[in-house]
Length: 113
Image 1 (tube, rainbow, N blue to C red):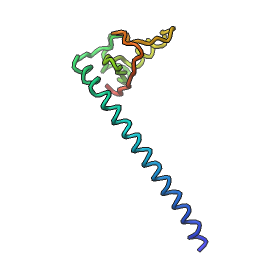
Image 2 (image 1 turned 45 degrees about the horizontal axis):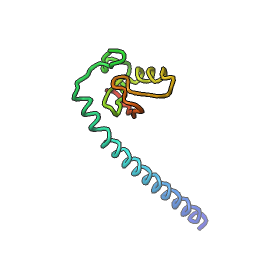
Image 3 (image 1 turned 45 degrees about the vertical axis):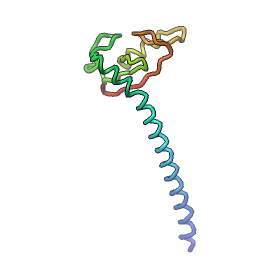
Image 4 (image 1 turned 90 degrees about the vertical axis):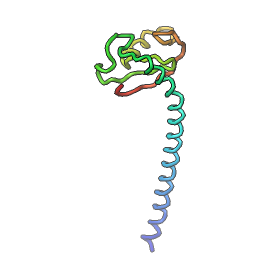
């Protein structure tokens, strides 16, 4: 009986933790779906230009370190390291796209582009 009495509360705790993890995963999945709906048209617009080179360093997206690329909400793309270098030189904190000067951009990391 003592073994069973210690077993039941532990099982209840384990099931509660599983339900909580499932709820968190579902919320995370819904948030990712919202982001995908936001970024898909932007990525499609960027892909329609068929650009193969980063406009900062002029090197190919394909043949660069790990191929990580940032897509901005204005649809311009840059190597991750190139955009991060550009951002470090912004002294005034007024980040804007290096191509179109779109202010206060959002960015999404696209791995293995």
